[in-house]
Image 1 (cartoon, rainbow, N blue to C red):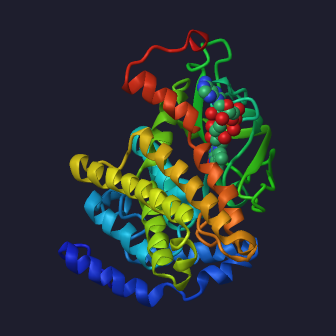
Image 2 (tube, helix red, strand yellow):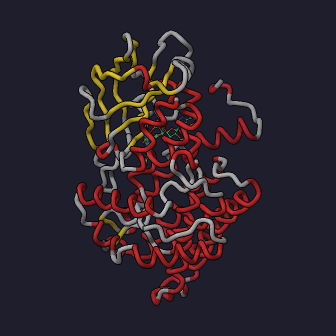
Image 3 (cartoon, rainbow, N blue to C red):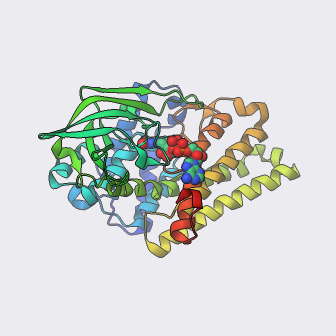
Length: 393
Ligand SMILES: Cc1cc2nc3c(=O)[nH]c(=O)nc-3n(C[C@H](O)[C@H](O)[C@H](O)COP(=O)(O)OP(=O)(O)OC[C@H]3O[C@@H](n4cnc5c(N)ncnc54)[C@H](O)[C@@H]3O)c2cc1C
């Protein structure tokens, strides 16, 4: 039953949300999830999606005609702040489904595609993103997976890699080359692909942090109906920009809020004396805290000034680097205790871990969604108008 009234004023909305989260977030869910099997993890994620959806919170950013709430950025900020404060689970398994898929279809999808796929997202269908390939990451336009038109379908062959949550996914946002003779950015198309279709093999990859979030995906004569082409044929590069621009929005805001709460807990903890009395550690801790507040401040001012949920690359660069310093610092402060098992911070408690696992995982932030080096190039060339290196021209 719906207990949160989005039409109430912001103060009442926040109070209702806080009260509801206090009742519904299961105590010790993080500890339970650290030992969870893949099936339990998936079941828990689906349960949490349904709970949030029943309150209009899972798709609060969606348009009303899609069954969303069309909340303002300020109202969405309240939701993320309260979820962080309540230490509620993240909908990690649905990141692509809830954000990237609607972001892409809103701009490029046909009415048939929206009617067919958007309701499924709310019901727990999982999507993942099939862009990267072994030879095409930063240089994504070099991708070689081929889609060849054959009547009312495309036949796809190739290999993808680093597809997050591919092992749980039902559908793929796929980039494939449809014109091998065109300049490399121009011969690419974007498709909706059924990951359960014949010819698809999904292989999880074990990572250095012990998780297997990623998958390799092998495509062998996979058929995609022509109606699943998103946007015009060979315009996939432009479609992919809509998908990728979704990556840096309120998701980073939410993570920053969680990091802030963790800092506050550390300051208040009886253990604080351990690092407070050490000049070097105290200096490092306060520097890292100040850096994190600078990122938060930047995000807050952008939200207030532009009312925009899409942030420039600098936000992700700063967040990723602060996160690395933060987790590296705690690994050092805790010494051997850094190996003691606890719910991890970065994966929001979904994995058995310790500070060391968090530290290893923090490196994903400066690679995924465009590495920091690439994002710095983007700032230099597109925002500052600096000349490109001769070798990169
Ligand atoms: C946590 C995580 C989740 C991901 N999820 C997905 C997903 O769901 N779907 C998907 O398709 N992909 C996903 N990826 C892949 C991600 O997009 C790529 O890893 C990323 O684009 C980098 O590509 P690469 O790994 O091939 O590295 P490379 O492109 O080989 O780069 C290697 C190094 O060289 C540097 N470099 C490369 N080119 C330049 C340049 N021109 N100038 C300066 N430095 C350069 C890079 O910064 C990097 O440090 C994920 C990655 C991570 C870490």
